[in-house]
Image 1: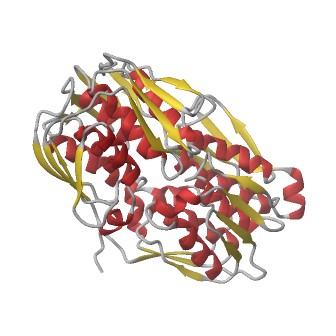
Image 2: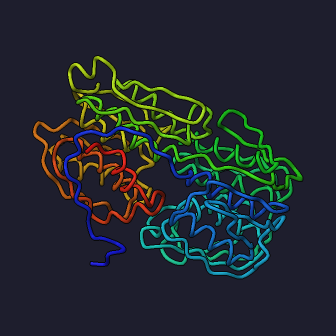
Image 3: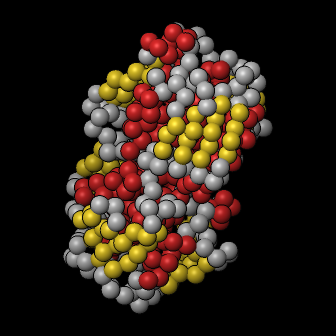
Length: 442
C-alpha cells in the first residue's frame, strides 16, 4: 500500500463530536476568482484560497496558458492578469475531474483565437458538456469532440466569432454551463443576452458567478432567471485584493455531525468561515437542518449546530420532504442525516447528481443500503428510511470526495465504517479526516 495514498480508512464508532472547525476556502469561489484574475487587467492577490486537486489543476492550466502566478504567503497567491484573452495560443490542458475548470476554461478558450485541447480523467469523458458547446458554436466557436459526441475531450480552434448579441443555453443539466458562458462573454466585447431554455437549476451557484464577476468590474443584468445581459465593452479589472470565503458545502458535514451528535449528548459544532453574510447558496443547508429538528445559531462568519429539545427527547431528528435544487452538493449530506430521522426522508429535484463526479444518486443509494437503510431511487429523487438495525459497512467512494466525507457521518450510527480511497477528499478538503478527528470526543 502506498502510505501517501491509503487504500482505505477505518472509522470506529464515533460517540460524540463537539468543537470548532475552521473551513478551507470555497472551491467554487477559488476557481472562479483564479480565472477572472487571469483575464483581468493588473495583478490580483487572492487570500484564503483553497489548496486542493481542483484548484491546482486550474492554476497549472493558467500557467500553461501564459498566466504568471506566485505564492504570496500562506493560502495566498498573486495572479498577473492578461487583461483579455490568454497570451498562449496553442496548448494542451489536463484538468483531472475538475468540472468547474473544464466548463469555464472551455468557454474562455473558445474566445481566445487559438488551438487548444481540453482533457481530463476517464470520468470527465462521461460528464456532458454539449449544452455549453452548442451555445459557444452559436457564437462562432469551432469545437470538436475527440471521443463521444457531447463529452470531453475537446479540441478548440480559432473560429470566426459571431458577435450577434444573443445566445440560448439549456439550464436544467448543470449551472456550470451558464457560469462558463457568462464569465467568457466579456472577451467578445459586445452586449450579449443569454436566454435560458427550460428551468435553471442550482441558482445559488449562478449568484456566486455574478458576484465574482461584479468584484472584477463586470455587472451582468439579470431578468429573473430567464435571461442575463453582459454589457458592451465589459472588461475585467483587478480589485487588487480579495478574500475567499470558507466552503459552505464542506460546512455541511460538521453541521450535520453537530445536530446528530447532540441527540445523544454531544455537540454543538461550530464552523468558521461562512455565516449570514455568505454568498454561497449551500449555507441554506442550515435551514434544512432546522426543518429536521436541529438548532442553528449564526453570525456574520460562523454557524453552529446542535439539536432541539424535541429531537433530544426522542433521540431522532424529523423526516422531511425537501426540494434540494438550491443546494445540490449539500443535499448529499441530508441523505446521511436522514439515517437519524424518525421516518422516510425524500430529497427531490436532485437530477444534477447524475452528472457530477459520479452518478451520485446511484452511488448514494447503493452505499446507504449497505448500512441497512431502506432506499428508493428515482430519476431525480432519493427516499431514505433509517436502518432498523445498523450494519457495519465498507463504503466505496467512486473517486468522489463528497461520498467519502458524507459517509464518515455513518460512524455516528454506532458501527465501524471503512471508507475506501479516503484520499479522494483531496479534490476539495485534503485535511478532512484530520479535522473530523479533532472534533471527535474521546
